[in-house]
Image 1 (cartoon, rainbow, N blue to C red):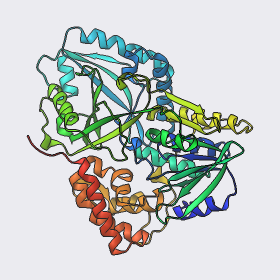
Image 2 (image 1 turned 120 degrees about the vertical axis):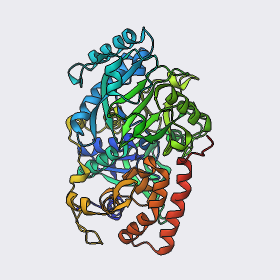
Image 3 (image 1 turned 30 degrees about the vertical axis):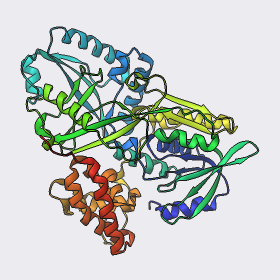
Length: 512
C-alpha cells in the first residue's frame, strides 16, 4: 500500500533526526530525494505547493542534449545531457521515448550547415545515440511533415532526441523515492532554518492544510528550490547576494492538424536566435518556446501578449496553415532557473551550480530536466562530504523508475479497483479530454494530489491540453475528489472556483 500524506506526516514527526532534508519538490528535489534514499539515507522532502508546481511541469517535454548549446560551443554540456538522455530512455521507458525531429531547409546552405551540426550531435552521443541524422529532399520532407509550408522548401535534415511528459516522470520519481523509503510532503513550506553551533541542522516548516508548525532536524539540508533558490539562501544569510536570473518561456497548444505528423519540428532560425520546437504531445501540438528576462518571480507566471504574437508569427512562417489566436487551446508560461552570468539569458548555459554556504546549507540549482539525475547525484555527493558521512555508492544511474500505472492496486472509497482494465470502463471526465474518473481517483490515492488543480494540471494534463475543457471538467473532478478526501460541499465549490481563476492564465484573449 502506498503511504498517504498523513502517514508521511506521522513518520516525519516521529523521527528525531533525518540524515537529509530536501527542500523543493520539482525535478531536482525529487531526484535528490530518490538518490539519497536509495543510498540508504533517511530522507524527508518538503514542497511548499504541489510537486512540480513550478518549472518542472512547464517544459517543452523534451529529453535532449540541447542542439542550441552545441551551436554555442558548449560541447561538455551537450555530452553530459546526451549521456543522461540515454540513461533516461533506459530507466524510464514507460514515459520517455525516442522522437524524430525535422529541421526544414529553405535556403541552399541550410542542408550542409545543419547537416554537419547534426552529424556532430550524433557523434557526441556515442553508444547512447538513438538513430542517425539523415537528409531529405523536398518531396520526402512534405510526406513526413504534411503541415510544413511548401513554398521555397528545399528539403530537410532529420535527427533524433527524446520526448516525455514532465509531470508523469515526476510522479515516477516520487513513487520510486517512496519505494526507497523517502518521505514526501507537499503543501509544506519551509518557513525558517534551524542552526546549531554555526551549522544548519534542520528546518522550520508549516502544514498549509492545518496551519500547524513543525521543526525537523537533519544532518544536512539541501536547497533544491529552482527559481526560488535565493529565498531559502536568504533564510541562511539575509545579506547573501542573489544568484538567480529567471527567464520566462511560453508554449502554445494547438490541434494536431497544424502539423499532421508524429514527427517533431525544429525551427533553428528565429528572430532572436532561439530554437523553437513544434512537438506532437497527447494528440496536440506544442509550439515554443520564448525567452523573456524577468525581474519578479511568480508561482503562476502568465504569458505576455508579445510572446504569444512571437510564436504565432513564427508558426505562420513554417506551418502551411497559419494558426490564429482562436486556434490556441491553451498557453502556459514557465520560468527557467538560470544562474546569473550576463544580460542575455538565452546565452546562459543550462549547466547546474552547486554551492555550500558558510553554515553548510547545500544548494543545487540551474540545469534542466534532462540532467536532473546528475544534479541529484552531485548534490548528495556534496551533502555526504558536508555532513562528514561515509560515502555511499550512487545507484540511480541504472535504476529503473517505477511505472505509476503498475503500482499495486488498492480499494478506494468508491470501491473501484485501480487497475488498467477498470480505467477502460471508467467514464471520461469531459468529451474533449482523454482522462477518466478512474484517473482522478488514482491521482488522489496513489499520487498525492490534494487539489483540483493538482489533478487537472499535473496528475493529468487537462489544463495544458485544453484550458476551457479543463474548467468544465472541474466540477466533476471536485465531486470525485470530495468522495476520496471527505470534502464538504463548500470545499468542493471553493476548489472549482480556485481552479477557474488559475485557468484564466492558460486562456488566450481572441482578437484576431
